[in-house]
Length: 152
Length: 241
Image (tube, rainbow over all chains, first blue to last red; front, side):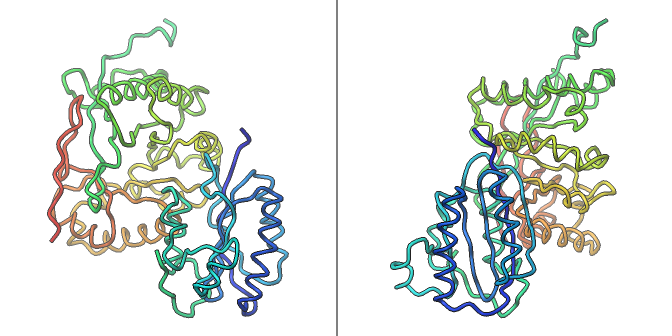
Protein backbone atom coordinates (compact mmCIF):
# COMPACT_ATOMS: atom_id res chain seq x y z
CA UNK A 1 0.00 0.00 0.00
CA UNK A 2 1.50 3.37 -0.95
CA UNK A 3 2.02 5.82 1.89
CA UNK A 4 -0.63 8.45 2.37
CA UNK A 5 -0.57 11.94 3.85
CA UNK A 6 -2.95 14.73 4.53
CA UNK A 7 -2.15 18.41 4.20
CA UNK A 8 -4.34 21.02 5.81
CA UNK A 9 -4.05 24.74 5.10
CA UNK A 10 -5.95 27.99 5.37
CA UNK A 11 -5.96 30.95 2.96
CA UNK A 12 -7.79 34.19 2.20
CA UNK A 13 -9.55 35.25 -1.00
CA UNK A 14 -7.98 38.09 -2.96
CA UNK A 15 -11.33 39.31 -4.24
CA UNK A 16 -14.91 38.42 -3.41
CA UNK A 17 -16.22 35.15 -4.82
CA UNK A 18 -19.73 35.03 -6.20
CA UNK A 19 -21.79 31.90 -5.88
CA UNK A 20 -21.23 31.22 -9.58
CA UNK A 21 -17.47 31.61 -9.26
CA UNK A 22 -17.40 29.25 -6.28
CA UNK A 23 -19.37 26.69 -8.24
CA UNK A 24 -16.95 26.99 -11.15
CA UNK A 25 -14.02 26.55 -8.75
CA UNK A 26 -15.70 23.48 -7.29
CA UNK A 27 -16.26 21.83 -10.65
CA UNK A 28 -12.73 22.45 -11.95
CA UNK A 29 -11.09 21.35 -8.70
CA UNK A 30 -13.19 18.20 -8.59
CA UNK A 31 -11.98 17.08 -12.00
CA UNK A 32 -8.36 17.87 -11.18
CA UNK A 33 -8.48 16.18 -7.77
CA UNK A 34 -10.10 13.10 -9.17
CA UNK A 35 -7.34 12.85 -11.75
CA UNK A 36 -4.69 13.07 -9.00
CA UNK A 37 -6.69 10.79 -6.69
CA UNK A 38 -6.86 13.52 -4.09
CA UNK A 39 -9.73 13.41 -1.63
CA UNK A 40 -10.67 15.91 1.04
CA UNK A 41 -12.77 18.96 1.65
CA UNK A 42 -12.62 22.68 0.85
CA UNK A 43 -14.54 25.13 2.98
CA UNK A 44 -15.30 28.75 2.18
CA UNK A 45 -16.67 31.19 4.67
CA UNK A 46 -16.59 34.99 4.57
CA UNK A 47 -13.55 35.19 2.36
CA UNK A 48 -11.63 32.46 4.18
CA UNK A 49 -10.67 29.12 2.66
CA UNK A 50 -9.81 26.01 4.63
CA UNK A 51 -8.81 22.86 2.83
CA UNK A 52 -7.94 19.26 3.70
CA UNK A 53 -6.12 17.41 0.92
CA UNK A 54 -5.35 13.71 1.24
CA UNK A 55 -3.57 11.34 -1.10
CA UNK A 56 -0.12 10.16 -2.07
CA UNK A 57 2.61 12.53 -0.87
CA UNK A 58 3.82 13.51 -4.34
CA UNK A 59 0.30 14.27 -5.59
CA UNK A 60 -0.63 16.30 -2.52
CA UNK A 61 2.65 18.25 -2.44
CA UNK A 62 2.37 19.00 -6.14
CA UNK A 63 -1.16 20.25 -5.68
CA UNK A 64 -0.15 22.47 -2.76
CA UNK A 65 2.67 23.94 -4.85
CA UNK A 66 0.21 24.64 -7.65
CA UNK A 67 -2.21 26.27 -5.24
CA UNK A 68 0.48 28.85 -4.44
CA UNK A 69 0.29 30.04 -8.05
CA UNK A 70 -3.45 30.58 -7.88
CA UNK A 71 -4.02 34.36 -7.74
CA UNK A 72 -7.54 33.99 -6.37
CA UNK A 73 -6.26 33.47 -2.84
CA UNK A 74 -3.29 34.54 -0.73
CA UNK A 75 -1.71 34.05 2.70
CA UNK A 76 -1.54 30.28 2.31
CA UNK A 77 -0.88 28.96 5.80
CA UNK A 78 0.25 25.37 6.15
CA UNK A 79 -1.26 24.00 9.34
CA UNK A 80 -0.32 20.35 9.21
CA UNK A 81 1.20 17.83 6.80
CA UNK A 82 1.61 14.34 8.20
CA UNK A 83 1.12 10.66 7.40
CA UNK A 84 -2.32 9.10 7.73
CA UNK A 85 -3.35 5.45 7.83
CA UNK A 86 -6.29 5.75 5.48
CA UNK A 87 -8.38 8.33 3.69
CA UNK A 88 -10.93 10.05 5.91
CA UNK A 89 -12.90 11.37 2.94
CA UNK A 90 -14.47 9.23 0.25
CA UNK A 91 -14.16 11.99 -2.35
CA UNK A 92 -13.36 15.67 -2.62
CA UNK A 93 -16.16 18.09 -1.85
CA UNK A 94 -16.70 21.71 -1.03
CA UNK A 95 -18.81 23.59 1.48
CA UNK A 96 -19.84 27.27 1.42
CA UNK A 97 -21.30 28.96 4.43
CA UNK A 98 -23.51 31.00 2.08
CA UNK A 99 -24.98 28.02 0.23
CA UNK A 100 -28.75 27.81 -0.27
CA UNK A 101 -30.71 24.59 0.32
CA UNK A 102 -31.47 24.46 -3.43
CA UNK A 103 -27.81 24.68 -4.37
CA UNK A 104 -27.03 21.92 -1.87
CA UNK A 105 -29.33 19.50 -3.64
CA UNK A 106 -28.52 20.61 -7.18
CA UNK A 107 -24.74 21.00 -7.29
CA UNK A 108 -22.68 17.81 -7.25
CA UNK A 109 -19.71 17.81 -4.90
CA UNK A 110 -21.24 20.37 -2.60
CA UNK A 111 -21.37 19.33 1.04
CA UNK A 112 -23.50 20.43 4.00
CA UNK A 113 -20.66 21.27 6.39
CA UNK A 114 -22.20 24.59 7.38
CA UNK A 115 -25.79 23.30 7.20
CA UNK A 116 -26.46 20.24 9.31
CA UNK A 117 -22.98 18.89 8.84
CA UNK A 118 -23.72 15.25 8.05
CA UNK A 119 -20.41 15.23 6.15
CA UNK A 120 -18.77 16.26 9.42
CA UNK A 121 -20.66 14.01 11.82
CA UNK A 122 -19.80 10.94 9.76
CA UNK A 123 -16.10 11.75 9.84
CA UNK A 124 -13.80 9.56 11.97
CA UNK A 125 -12.29 11.41 14.87
CA UNK A 126 -8.77 12.46 14.12
CA UNK A 127 -6.74 15.50 13.21
CA UNK A 128 -8.87 16.49 10.17
CA UNK A 129 -12.08 16.43 12.18
CA UNK A 130 -10.56 18.41 15.05
CA UNK A 131 -9.17 21.06 12.71
CA UNK A 132 -12.45 21.36 10.80
CA UNK A 133 -14.15 21.89 14.16
CA UNK A 134 -11.59 24.58 14.98
CA UNK A 135 -12.29 26.35 11.66
CA UNK A 136 -16.02 26.05 12.27
CA UNK A 137 -15.49 27.80 15.62
CA UNK A 138 -13.77 30.69 13.88
CA UNK A 139 -10.11 29.68 14.11
CA UNK A 140 -7.69 30.03 11.22
CA UNK A 141 -9.59 32.90 9.67
CA UNK A 142 -7.24 35.67 8.67
CA UNK A 143 -10.15 37.65 7.25
CA UNK A 144 -12.46 38.57 10.07
CA UNK A 145 -15.89 39.67 9.01
CA UNK A 146 -17.88 37.91 11.68
CA UNK A 147 -18.18 34.18 12.02
CA UNK A 148 -21.25 32.59 10.55
CA UNK A 149 -22.66 29.93 12.78
CA UNK A 150 -21.83 26.57 11.25
CA UNK A 151 -24.12 23.60 11.28
CA UNK A 152 -21.71 21.50 13.31
CA UNK B 1 27.40 -11.47 29.73
CA UNK B 2 25.59 -10.68 26.49
CA UNK B 3 23.24 -7.74 26.84
CA UNK B 4 20.37 -9.74 25.40
CA UNK B 5 20.76 -12.59 27.87
CA UNK B 6 20.85 -10.58 31.06
CA UNK B 7 18.03 -11.27 33.50
CA UNK B 8 15.57 -8.40 33.89
CA UNK B 9 13.90 -7.61 37.20
CA UNK B 10 10.39 -9.07 37.41
CA UNK B 11 7.76 -6.52 36.65
CA UNK B 12 4.11 -6.13 35.91
CA UNK B 13 1.72 -3.22 35.37
CA UNK B 14 -0.87 -1.02 36.96
CA UNK B 15 -3.40 0.70 34.71
CA UNK B 16 -4.69 4.21 35.19
CA UNK B 17 -7.55 5.48 33.02
CA UNK B 18 -7.63 8.69 30.99
CA UNK B 19 -11.26 9.73 31.15
CA UNK B 20 -13.45 11.96 29.01
CA UNK B 21 -15.52 13.63 31.72
CA UNK B 22 -17.93 15.16 29.21
CA UNK B 23 -18.84 11.86 27.54
CA UNK B 24 -18.25 10.05 30.88
CA UNK B 25 -16.22 7.34 29.24
CA UNK B 26 -12.70 5.96 29.29
CA UNK B 27 -10.53 7.16 26.43
CA UNK B 28 -7.52 5.05 27.33
CA UNK B 29 -5.59 3.21 30.02
CA UNK B 30 -1.98 4.10 30.63
CA UNK B 31 0.19 1.11 31.51
CA UNK B 32 2.44 1.99 34.46
CA UNK B 33 5.30 -0.34 35.29
CA UNK B 34 5.22 -1.92 38.78
CA UNK B 35 7.04 -4.60 40.75
CA UNK B 36 5.36 -7.97 41.33
CA UNK B 37 4.26 -6.69 44.74
CA UNK B 38 3.06 -3.34 43.34
CA UNK B 39 6.44 -1.69 43.97
CA UNK B 40 6.77 1.72 42.30
CA UNK B 41 8.30 2.09 38.85
CA UNK B 42 11.59 3.65 39.96
CA UNK B 43 12.42 0.55 42.04
CA UNK B 44 12.20 -1.51 38.88
CA UNK B 45 14.11 0.89 36.64
CA UNK B 46 16.99 1.20 39.12
CA UNK B 47 17.64 -2.52 38.67
CA UNK B 48 18.05 -2.15 34.91
CA UNK B 49 21.53 -1.21 33.68
CA UNK B 50 21.56 1.93 31.54
CA UNK B 51 22.87 0.12 28.45
CA UNK B 52 19.99 -2.34 28.65
CA UNK B 53 17.28 0.23 29.25
CA UNK B 54 16.06 0.45 25.65
CA UNK B 55 15.67 -3.34 25.43
CA UNK B 56 13.80 -3.34 28.71
CA UNK B 57 11.65 -0.48 27.45
CA UNK B 58 10.74 -2.49 24.35
CA UNK B 59 9.99 -5.65 26.33
CA UNK B 60 7.80 -3.72 28.78
CA UNK B 61 5.50 -2.51 26.00
CA UNK B 62 5.05 -6.06 24.69
CA UNK B 63 4.17 -7.31 28.19
CA UNK B 64 1.80 -4.40 28.78
CA UNK B 65 -0.13 -5.18 25.59
CA UNK B 66 -0.43 -8.83 26.65
CA UNK B 67 -1.74 -7.98 30.09
CA UNK B 68 -4.11 -5.25 28.86
CA UNK B 69 -5.54 -7.69 26.31
CA UNK B 70 -6.05 -10.38 28.95
CA UNK B 71 -7.90 -7.79 31.03
CA UNK B 72 -10.18 -7.20 28.04
CA UNK B 73 -9.16 -3.69 27.00
CA UNK B 74 -11.66 -2.06 24.66
CA UNK B 75 -10.30 1.47 24.41
CA UNK B 76 -6.88 3.01 23.69
CA UNK B 77 -3.74 1.87 25.49
CA UNK B 78 -1.07 4.44 26.37
CA UNK B 79 2.44 3.01 26.50
CA UNK B 80 5.64 4.78 27.46
CA UNK B 81 8.49 4.96 24.99
CA UNK B 82 12.05 6.14 25.55
CA UNK B 83 12.64 8.20 22.39
CA UNK B 84 16.25 7.09 22.27
CA UNK B 85 15.03 3.51 21.81
CA UNK B 86 14.11 4.52 18.27
CA UNK B 87 17.78 5.02 17.51
CA UNK B 88 19.21 2.19 19.55
CA UNK B 89 16.77 -0.47 18.41
CA UNK B 90 15.22 -0.74 14.96
CA UNK B 91 12.53 -2.98 16.45
CA UNK B 92 11.54 -0.60 19.28
CA UNK B 93 8.16 0.27 17.77
CA UNK B 94 7.81 -2.59 15.30
CA UNK B 95 7.83 -5.11 18.16
CA UNK B 96 5.04 -3.11 19.81
CA UNK B 97 3.01 -3.21 16.60
CA UNK B 98 3.62 -6.95 16.24
CA UNK B 99 2.51 -7.52 19.83
CA UNK B 100 -0.67 -5.58 19.12
CA UNK B 101 -1.28 -7.71 16.01
CA UNK B 102 -0.68 -10.96 17.93
CA UNK B 103 -3.17 -9.86 20.57
CA UNK B 104 -5.72 -8.63 18.02
CA UNK B 105 -5.50 -5.12 19.38
CA UNK B 106 -6.02 -2.60 16.55
CA UNK B 107 -2.86 -0.54 16.01
CA UNK B 108 -4.91 2.63 16.06
CA UNK B 109 -5.55 1.94 19.76
CA UNK B 110 -1.85 2.22 20.61
CA UNK B 111 -0.69 5.59 21.93
CA UNK B 112 3.04 6.01 22.51
CA UNK B 113 3.98 8.48 25.23
CA UNK B 114 7.31 10.26 25.22
CA UNK B 115 8.30 12.89 27.73
CA UNK B 116 9.04 16.40 26.58
CA UNK B 117 12.49 16.38 28.14
CA UNK B 118 13.57 13.31 26.22
CA UNK B 119 12.26 14.47 22.87
CA UNK B 120 13.83 17.88 22.92
CA UNK B 121 17.33 16.80 21.83
CA UNK B 122 16.58 16.48 18.14
CA UNK B 123 12.92 16.99 17.42
CA UNK B 124 13.15 16.95 13.63
CA UNK B 125 14.98 13.63 13.69
CA UNK B 126 12.52 12.16 16.15
CA UNK B 127 9.59 13.40 14.05
CA UNK B 128 10.95 11.70 10.97
CA UNK B 129 11.38 8.37 12.76
CA UNK B 130 8.04 8.37 14.52
CA UNK B 131 6.03 9.59 11.53
CA UNK B 132 6.79 6.33 9.80
CA UNK B 133 4.86 4.49 12.52
CA UNK B 134 2.12 7.08 12.66
CA UNK B 135 1.44 6.19 9.04
CA UNK B 136 0.62 2.71 10.35
CA UNK B 137 -1.88 4.15 12.80
CA UNK B 138 0.09 4.51 16.04
CA UNK B 139 -0.77 7.70 17.94
CA UNK B 140 1.70 9.84 19.81
CA UNK B 141 1.41 11.74 23.09
CA UNK B 142 3.90 14.14 24.65
CA UNK B 143 4.03 13.48 28.38
CA UNK B 144 4.83 16.08 31.07
CA UNK B 145 4.14 18.89 28.60
CA UNK B 146 5.20 22.24 30.00
CA UNK B 147 7.74 20.69 32.36
CA UNK B 148 10.83 21.07 30.21
CA UNK B 149 12.43 24.05 28.59
CA UNK B 150 11.13 23.52 25.08
CA UNK B 151 7.42 23.91 25.76
CA UNK B 152 5.44 25.10 22.80
CA UNK B 153 8.49 25.15 20.51
CA UNK B 154 8.18 21.40 20.39
CA UNK B 155 5.07 21.75 18.27
CA UNK B 156 6.84 23.60 15.46
CA UNK B 157 8.32 20.52 13.82
CA UNK B 158 5.82 18.01 14.86
CA UNK B 159 2.22 17.89 16.02
CA UNK B 160 1.42 14.96 18.31
CA UNK B 161 -2.08 13.55 18.75
CA UNK B 162 -2.14 14.38 22.45
CA UNK B 163 -0.23 16.39 25.00
CA UNK B 164 -0.41 15.66 28.71
CA UNK B 165 -0.19 18.80 30.81
CA UNK B 166 2.49 18.44 33.41
CA UNK B 167 1.24 18.04 36.99
CA UNK B 168 3.26 21.07 37.99
CA UNK B 169 0.98 23.22 35.83
CA UNK B 170 -2.17 21.52 37.11
CA UNK B 171 -1.40 21.64 40.83
CA UNK B 172 -3.45 24.40 42.45
CA UNK B 173 -4.32 25.95 39.08
CA UNK B 174 -7.68 27.14 40.42
CA UNK B 175 -5.97 29.83 42.50
CA UNK B 176 -2.83 30.57 40.52
CA UNK B 177 -2.83 33.20 37.77
CA UNK B 178 0.42 32.35 35.96
CA UNK B 179 -0.54 28.66 35.74
CA UNK B 180 -3.95 29.64 34.39
CA UNK B 181 -2.44 31.95 31.76
CA UNK B 182 0.02 29.29 30.59
CA UNK B 183 -2.58 26.53 30.41
CA UNK B 184 -4.99 28.81 28.53
CA UNK B 185 -2.25 29.50 25.98
CA UNK B 186 -1.40 25.80 25.61
CA UNK B 187 -5.08 24.97 25.20
CA UNK B 188 -5.48 27.61 22.48
CA UNK B 189 -2.43 26.34 20.57
CA UNK B 190 -3.56 22.74 20.83
CA UNK B 191 -7.07 23.67 19.68
CA UNK B 192 -5.59 25.36 16.60
CA UNK B 193 -3.47 22.33 15.77
CA UNK B 194 -5.98 19.57 16.47
CA UNK B 195 -4.08 18.21 19.47
CA UNK B 196 -5.98 16.74 22.42
CA UNK B 197 -5.10 18.15 25.83
CA UNK B 198 -5.06 15.76 28.80
CA UNK B 199 -4.76 17.19 32.30
CA UNK B 200 -2.64 14.87 34.37
CA UNK B 201 -2.32 14.55 38.12
CA UNK B 202 -5.65 16.21 38.90
CA UNK B 203 -6.30 15.70 42.61
CA UNK B 204 -8.87 18.24 43.73
CA UNK B 205 -12.32 19.12 42.55
CA UNK B 206 -11.28 22.79 42.32
CA UNK B 207 -8.47 21.95 39.88
CA UNK B 208 -10.88 19.84 37.87
CA UNK B 209 -13.55 22.53 37.74
CA UNK B 210 -11.16 25.24 36.59
CA UNK B 211 -9.84 23.01 33.79
CA UNK B 212 -13.31 21.78 32.77
CA UNK B 213 -14.50 25.39 32.57
CA UNK B 214 -11.60 26.14 30.28
CA UNK B 215 -12.88 23.38 27.99
CA UNK B 216 -10.54 20.56 28.97
CA UNK B 217 -12.43 17.26 28.95
CA UNK B 218 -9.70 14.65 29.15
CA UNK B 219 -8.29 13.88 32.59
CA UNK B 220 -6.02 11.48 34.40
CA UNK B 221 -5.50 11.56 38.14
CA UNK B 222 -6.39 10.31 41.60
CA UNK B 223 -9.59 12.33 41.57
CA UNK B 224 -10.95 9.97 38.89
CA UNK B 225 -9.10 6.72 39.53
CA UNK B 226 -5.92 5.50 41.15
CA UNK B 227 -3.80 3.11 39.11
CA UNK B 228 -5.27 -0.40 39.36
CA UNK B 229 -2.67 -3.08 40.04
CA UNK B 230 -3.00 -5.61 37.20
CA UNK B 231 -6.54 -4.37 36.77
CA UNK B 232 -8.73 -1.62 35.36
CA UNK B 233 -9.79 0.32 38.45
CA UNK B 234 -13.26 1.72 39.19
CA UNK B 235 -13.79 5.29 38.03
CA UNK B 236 -15.33 8.20 39.84
CA UNK B 237 -16.74 10.99 37.68
CA UNK B 238 -17.04 14.26 39.55
CA UNK B 239 -20.47 15.87 39.62
CA UNK B 240 -20.51 18.94 37.42
CA UNK B 241 -21.36 22.07 39.35
